[in-house]
Amino acid sequence: MDIAPSPIPSRTQYVLEAVKHAILTGRLRPGQALVEAELAAQFGVSKTPVREALKTLAGRGLVVMSEYKGATVRTVDTAMAHSVYDVRLLLEPEALRRTVTAGAALETAGAALERSDAAADPAGRSLANRDFHRALYLPCGNPLLTRMLDELRDQAALVSAIGRQAVPSWEREAREHREILARALDGDADGAASALHDHIASFVQRAFPDGERHPTAPVADRE
Amino acid sequence: MDIAPSPIPSRTQYVLEAVKHAILTGRLRPGQALVEAELAAQFGVSKTPVREALKTLAGRGLVVMSEYKGATVRTVDTAMAHSVYDVRLLLEPEALRRTVTAGAALETAGAALERSDAAADPAGRSLANRDFHRALYLPCGNPLLTRMLDELRDQAALVSAIGRQAVPSWEREAREHREILARALDGDADGAASALHDHIASFVQRAFPDGERHPTAPVADRE
DNA sequence: TCACATATCTTGTCTCGTATATGACGCATG
DNA sequence: CATGCGTCATATACGAGACAAGATATGTGA
Image 1: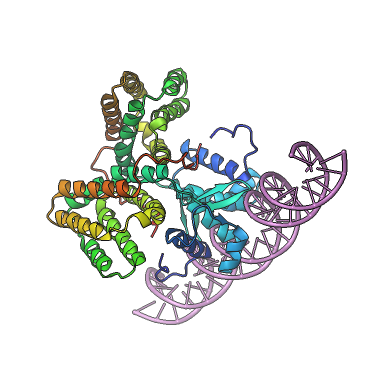
Image 2: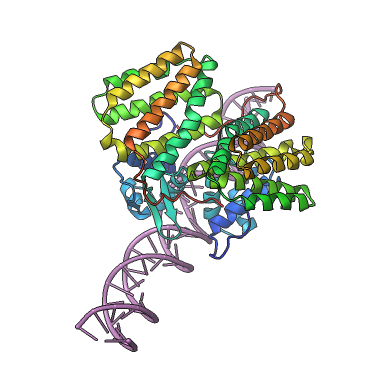
């Protein structure tokens, strides 16, 4: 995403962030082939860091790698979108509940919300919204849960890049975000979790209505 | 785990499975350094596939990689164990509920249960138990949920390798497994999910009682 | 005993060779 | 003449080994 702060990022990290950013912002479209040699030349590095970066992204489900066929940006369909938001619904409200119960600080979320309001372009809003959601589940107390929600959030962003055209109602998003944060700041754990649940569920229902399922997006088999 | 069926597995896959197996069976102890050159020599391959395998395992949380310092088998402590089973409690009962609701076939689970009973050594039982749990959540209908539960199950196995000495009550495990399967076969989705929840919760409580938390196991930061 | 220089070990990166899949072309055949 | 099949060329990823960069451990001097 942004350049790493102080330490010199390894080339692998650099390529990883660059490709990830390109995918999540939609510059690299789903299905597009990611040729190692091309990316290597583009970033001015050798193929090795490119390979490792692609492998890592494949592990996070953003790209798919076929043996001897190379990597492509993961294609998204309605079924895959439902899968992502489905699991997210199981985890993110519960994480928020714990954040609130633990009485964690939420200034970061408030700041992200203001940045979202101040943002001019959709890309900036989207970025701020990502930060907002993360600020809600980051202090939940379970680092593994945090990591999984990070992965889910990235996949959701990939999905969003497709479904966004149908969902321009960012004002509704902002309103719901404020509602969630208000309840969280009130210490109403169940209310905040419930509001977050509805927020996510209503989004997926608007952006990916049922009934138009595509064949199925293959998820990397692991066994 | 086992050798891939028909196609010749790539060297990376081979190393990946071998190292994973060694970690999950406890042959490679947590904290142990995984030197690329050593593994490469041991498996008769170059460093390249070893590096990629380690990177993949790091992505799944089984090994930790530090820049220029190398990879080590992930260390486990009580806090980390609670993290794993905590998330598992959020996902696995729900997955089973869906499996039952969808009316999926469960012969695989029954077969795994029989294999567990027939197994002579603890390693065989552990393997069969892994298969049993997977058979319950595999047909849940959400491939992403399946993938995450696979990852959680592997981490749980890593944890188990430590806590196992304190938990020799495999008969209780078998009894609870039969109970879960019976309810699932009856079509009692809520009952099966509830039984699975209790099964997991009681296990973690016996193997990792509260109160003796260690500092915190670092989870690979991703941002 | 501590600070600093150096030796050694390990990882990160590069370059080149090999294995595999895909697509095009030509030939045989209905 | 159209069509299906086999062969080959090319593109691409996979893997090996060499080199460079960084980190840790050791030894030496004050």
